[in-house]
Amino acid sequence: MTRPTARVLAMLELLQAGGQRTVGDLAARLGVDERTVRRYAVHLADLGIPVQAQRGRYGGYRLARGYKLPPLMMTEDEAVAVVMGLSAAERVGLATTDNTASVSALAKVSRVLPRALAERLDSLLSSAELTTPVSAAAPVGASTLLGLASAAQARRTVVITYTAWDGRESQRTLDVYGLVFHSGRWYATGNDHGRDDVRTFRMDRIASVTQGDGSFVVPADFDAGTQVVSGIAAVRWSHRVSVVLRTTVADASERLPRSAGRLSEHADGVLFEARAERLDGMARMLAGLGWDFEVITPGALRDEVLALSDRLRASAVRETTTGRGQSDGAEPT
Image 1 (cartoon, helix red, strand yellow):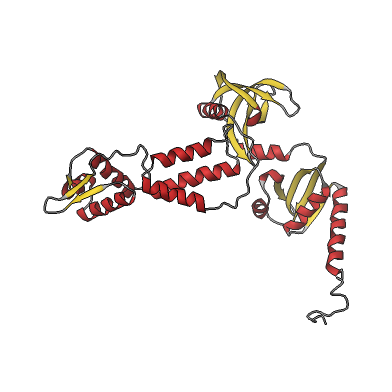
Image 2 (cartoon, one colour; image 1 turned 45 degrees about the vertical axis):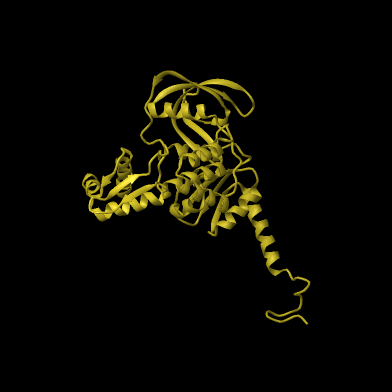
C-alpha cells in the first residue's frame, strides 16, 4: 500500500471515531498540510464515502450520520486487481472442486465495497472480454491445496492417498518441496519416501492429505517449476529426439517452453532433447522455429523433415487454376 493511500485510510479511521474533525487537527495527525487533507476528503467522496464538510474558521470534516463503513475498503486499483484476478483465475483453470467459488467470491467482494465503486466494477465485468483461451481445469479440493501448501511452508512430512494413471490407489509419504500450477493443473513435487526419489504428483488425483512424522530440508538447488515441467517432458512417448539447434540457449529458452524438452550447450549451438509421440509433428515444430538444425536421432525424424520440405516446395511452385500461364502482376481477362 502506498503512503498516500495509507494516509487516506488513516483519515477515514479518524473520521469513523465520530464527531467533527478540524482540518488542522487532521493535518497534524496525518503529518500533511491542510490542502492535502482537503484532497484526501475528495478522494474519500470519490470512493462513495459520505464525507461532509463544514466551512468556516473552525470548519472540518465528519461522516454522515448513521453511516456504517463496509468491512472491506479498497482503492479503485486494488478492487480492479481483485475482481479481474478472480475472473482471470477462473478462466486459466485456477479452480478448486467448488466451481462456484470464484463467482461467489466476486459477489461477496461487490457486496462489501462502497456502492459507487461496486457499480463501476459491475460495469467493467459486464463490458470487458478476455481473449485468453479457457483452460480445461483439473479442479483440486481446497483442503488438499491448503494442506500441501502448509506442509511445504512448515517443512513437515505428509501422507497422501494417491490414485495413479492406471487407477491404482496407494499411500505415499511425501516431503513437499513445492507446488506448481502448469497448463491447467496443480502439481506437488518432492521426496517420495517409498521411492527414495523426487517425484511429482497431480493434485487432482490426491484424495487426502494427513500430517506425518518428521521434517525435512529442501535441497538448496531445487527448483519446483523446473522439476515439474521437465518431468512432464520426460513422459514415455514413442520417440526420443535429439536435435542440435543453430542458436543460443538464451534464444531457444525464449521460444521453447520448458515442458517441450531439455536444452543444453553444444559445440554447434544448443542440444534439444525431447520425447515425441508423432515425428511429423516434431518436424513441423522444428521447421517453425526458424533456425537451422541438425537431427541427431532418430533417423526417422530426418525422413519426416525431408517429407515436410518436399511438401512445402511443392506448395510453393504449384500453379493454381486461375493463375496458370499468367506472369506476376498480370490482371486476369
